Length: 252
Ligand SMILES: CC(C)(COP(=O)(O)OP(=O)(O)OC[C@H]1O[C@@H](n2cnc3c(N)ncnc32)[C@H](O)[C@@H]1OP(=O)(O)O)[C@@H](O)C(=O)NCCC(=O)NCCS
Image 1 (cartoon, rainbow, N blue to C red):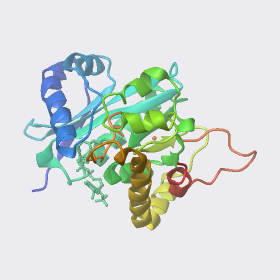
Image 2: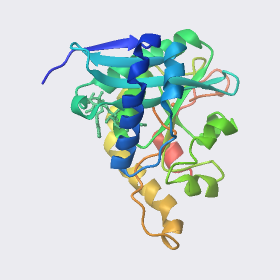
Image 3: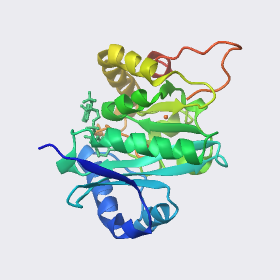
Image 4: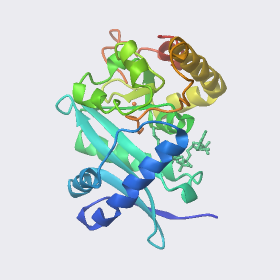
């Protein structure tokens, strides 16, 4: 069924939806067999009051989706986190609309900040690449301990730590306002290579997991907890650095 959604910048009037949003985040993570950076309704409500969240409803006022902004390293980095779409409204383009709105809000509120995300989901990678994000290595993300502490509740945290926070199951993506490709370019790259990316993602995950399989039961490793929805710094003088997913995938 076709739906028209209202995509709004959340405010205090939406606070009653915080509980249903948290519950859906938790049950979706369970269904995917992942850990999650746990968010409390209080935390979500604060984001709403601060005008740092986007909420979506159907025309009839049914809650349909949500995402919020977090800042790290004293505002140098912004993450668009906690992306969630109510299961009944998935695959109808809603996540794409929510991500576009939260990206615009992030750009307006923090015009200098690098916007990043960690994800294992192909859907989120596709959406990010349509916004101009490109894949990067973890070293290009915030090194703020408070951000990485959010990964503690993820089933893959041991892998992340064994790699000294340099790699894990998630792909890091980033948009640097000072040095970025045009969305048409990143989108074209993703479309051209998406099958390969999917394959490389599986290989990378298998490689990362292999040392742990000797000691543990195989886990259902699918996705990270600190993601949500991620690049660039110091380009070679006068030239844009060329990035491809291979660069980050092969960095293990
Ligand atoms: C991931 C999630 C947000 C996607 O929401 P959605 O509204 O279904 O996504 P959209 O309909 O906007 O899809 C965007 C694109 O991704 C594709 N896509 C959607 N789900 C996909 C999936 N599971 N696998 C591969 N591609 C997918 C869509 O086909 C679409 O591509 P298109 O533009 O070529 O049609 C939703 O499934 C969800 O809430 N999952 C649980 C929480 C979660 O994983 N959050 C992300 C944490 S990083």
